[in-house]
Length: 346
Ligand code: SF4
Image (cartoon, rainbow, N blue to C red; front, top):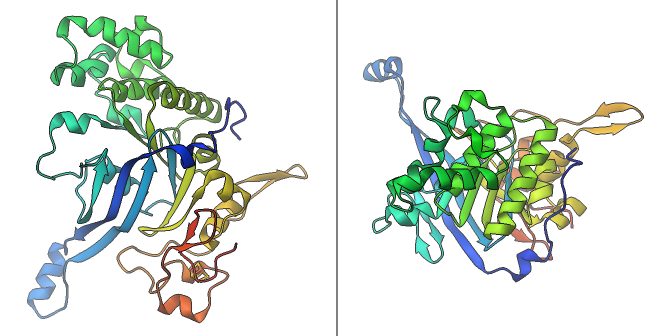
């Protein structure tokens, strides 16, 4: 779909780069409080209690320096929650986030504001993440001035240089966000993230709200910035087609757990996990003049009561009795790949 992408990631990058980001046994629970009505009913003897949703469950992940790792899965799989944990915006219920050898998870004592600048995030909806009353010059210099990275009097020049880097003309510095298109606003969001010179950039569905042509332009920009600034990227997307163009490795999540991890080349050569295979079948295909795709059967189960054993078993065409009884571990399936399945395709 993204024909205008200039090039694919360097497949050798994963083997040669050194680890930069380590997410270790990270879990994140959310508590859903009982409603006022349920609280009243519980007083007269009915059984209601707060419910715990495990949005991310025991995820471990290493991201080599200078590489891009894609995090994919359906809505509600925990990928955005994991991204916010990696960005230090959300604390982990268990586990830790280590960047450049230092604990960086939210709420961890000893982490300075300067440390936090090393990680920045680009969001899906730039209109929602940009202050509509702030001029572009203020948006892209606010953090750098606040943290003393630039002098206030150098803002115009600094902002103009950042805009040039993300492909916007410097004469838009005094405009407001609503005066830009969606793609331009995303460029402003990227410029804001770059303003504090991060080393690790987390992009949460950065092109999901854009049309295909603009998607390709933003992906090309991120690829250029990754190379020029030697960035490490965590790229969150529901779209395997987009991830293919920018990521060296792909991690697939389902109901809070990693179910497959592989180099992009290996994953696209043949996914090992039935869920990943189902995601591939969902990608629209054009053949005989007709557009077709095969949606994954069944509903995504509620994270409030995930299925026993392998969470995917109620929707899996390959399920056997063991799948509903025992949780499969992440199993090595060759060439550094991992799959959480009792019957992986290898
Ligand atoms: Fe399907 Fe069983 Fe593998 Fe789960 S463990 S993906 S249910 S075959």
